[in-house]
Amino acid sequence: MGKIIVIDSSNEKHVLKFKTYEYPNLMELIANSYYEDIGECRGRGLCGTCVVETDNEELLKEELDINERLILKQLLGNSNNLRLACQIRLTPKLNNSTFKVIDNY
Image (cartoon, rainbow, N blue to C red):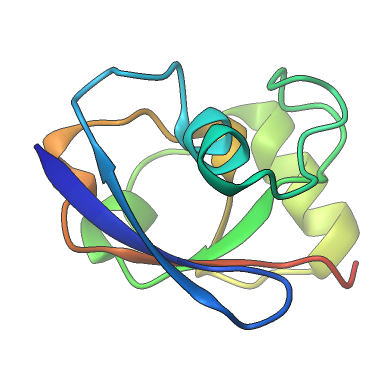
């Protein structure tokens, strides 16, 4: 079992435990764990309402889907530590990572 820290839009920290592939993506884990209002497009990577900032270097080195790359660029410019939570799979490499929900776009 893995665990992550999520800092919500009110700057409160939540420690969330997860099993690999327990949810389709990080956005679902966040939404189901403490009801953060994210993901208007229901995880299709089209709206940009589930932007998170992360410290996970391995995750940040991954090649982004073209839609995710375009949405992040349109909303926030070229920040290299942002991802869409709906595009992050729950894998062991997320263990002990921190994600901050970004809601001011």
